[in-house]
Length: 317
Image (cartoon, rainbow, N blue to C red; front, side, top):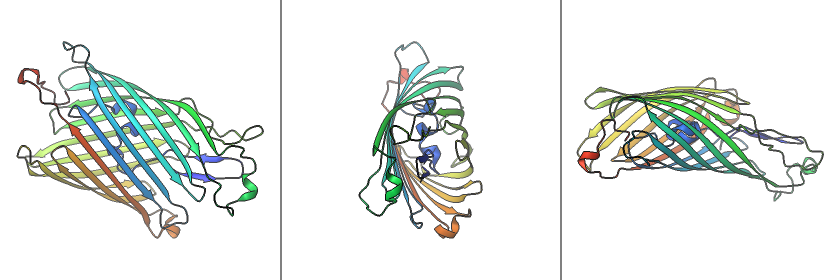
């Protein structure tokens, strides 16, 4: 999350992940519950610009699942819980978020699903005065060192799924629909509205041979500062033995005009570990020495064992 301290306000930019495809609910509320399994736990950690004067540390944790209230219907309710924490700078400027995602997936046919969803988020922002030499004169307008508010998001996702190895997700997410005030002052303070963020993406996985899948990913995010990412990776299946399924993925992504980063993923059964490292290529590389920072992702999926008669053709069920 890019944040700059100015004389009368705190300019804010949403958090972002290089491995955005492993933080689905930060990408679109409608991606909650869209996976092959029953329960999913995800975690993301990013440390950015440690080589510069001010570094950024970001953490996300999430849980999502699907609920079916009518056993005769192929439609289902999507539920997700998201926790974000971001901290930056000498002032320990931090933002904590707790979000609830709620969606409804309609099965159009055997291969196509459409999901609209909303996101309700409670947020708290705070910073610290523990360092006496940090801009003391400019801190006077701030009568509060913390602030809370409520925010809303919404999204729409379309999924095409041929089988468990071939699928495509295309969608759009909208965040900060209420444009909450992010300033810390009371009377006379400049109002700093959180600008709405729009996320447009396409994420695909394609079986190209018996032991190889091709991954293609693209993302455009538009807020105060815009970013566009394009990437590709190859997933290689080392073992398909039940209970000992092992796969390895290697690829790279380019954030236009800013950074390139290799990314590696290890799969063991339903456990996933992802690692990437940003190499900064923008004008800021003078300060960072091209060192953007590492990012980690982890995901664990639980699949309930169902009687054979309950299995569906589409593996997302």
